[in-house]
Length: 108
Image 1 (tube, rainbow, N blue to C red):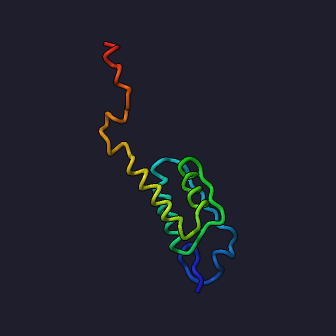
Image 2 (cartoon, helix red, strand yellow):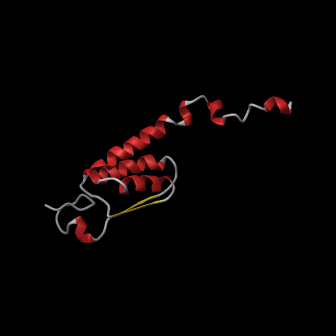
Image 3 (cartoon, rainbow, N blue to C red):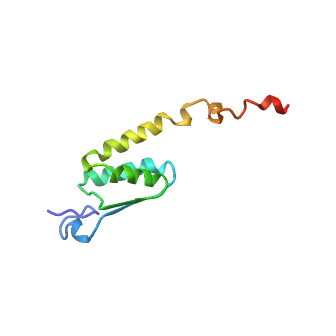
């Protein structure tokens, strides 16, 4: 049985339709969602021939293209775990400004 990208069986193999291209756009949090998209494709046995991205999508694309298919999900998760661990949302809101307020007394 052959499965199409749309989940229907029968007809042509997905590979028979041409090259598979994964295009990933930028936009911060979208990068985390892109990992889920790649995971769904990977679990369906679909690996891209080409990966293209911009901004955070380019980082995800580099991780995908730079690793063997068997290692890609682990590397993506490792990257996003690091991003989440360093999130400014986990810190005091004032610490996000670093030393910006150190000289505030000079102005008053």
